[in-house]
Image (cartoon, rainbow, N blue to C red; front, top):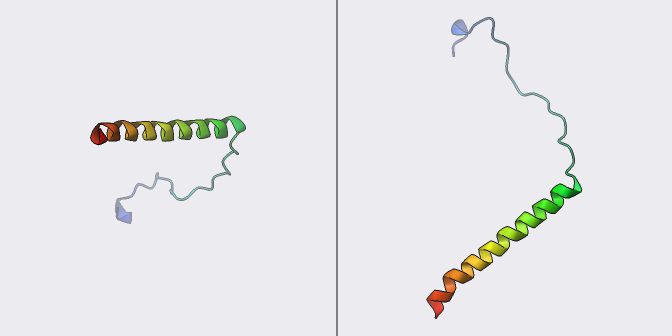
Length: 56
């Protein structure tokens, strides 16, 4: 937007400094690992379910 059309009431916007995100707790890490394991298991079972009818 050209400077002439900008409202003088608008504040400037820019990059804001953010604090460091809190460290993950142990429960978060265990849940992430559990979900990852469940997804990999589901993919393997799904892939096997697709291959079995094609092979036999």
